Structure formats: C-alpha cells, structure tokens
Length: 104
Image (cartoon, rainbow, N blue to C red):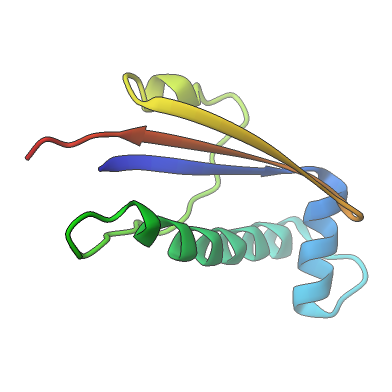
C-alpha cells in the first residue's frame, strides 16, 4: 500500500501544540513547524502499521511542511481519500489520508 497523510491544524491548535511541547508562551513559526512534524511522526508511526500486510516492514518518509497553494489531490492522484475532522479544546485538526494499493 502506498499513500500519505496530511495533518492540517488550526492556528490555535498549532500554537498550543508547540507551546506545550516546548514549554514556551509564544512559539515562532519554526517552532510550530517542528512541533507539527513531530506530531506527524507520532501519528503516522502509530497508524501506518495498521495498514501493513503479511508483517511487511513499513517505510515512512520524513514529514514535510507543504505550501498552502499545493494541489494535494494531484500529488496523490488515483488514490482513495478519507477526511477526518478532530475538534479539541485548543483548536481543530483536519486529517486527510490517501491510500493507493501497490500490486507488486
């Protein structure tokens, strides 16, 4: 299986995540991006093995910050897409999962 996961947090959630992880009141853009990448590692690291077949090894690429004007659907063209919106006290996060079957 091939695919990707997009985590799109609200600004308030992103600030809360970075602030809590780094124990600072006003995280910089770089702090927020770093915290979001760490959260992406944790979420993907826990989710990807659920998709593994026959005890195969899962390969997860490092998370990256994608510019807002990127056409994500085009990048994952032909894959199934599922959206989940998570509402938390600190803000909202949208998770988008793209899954495509590799028949090798």
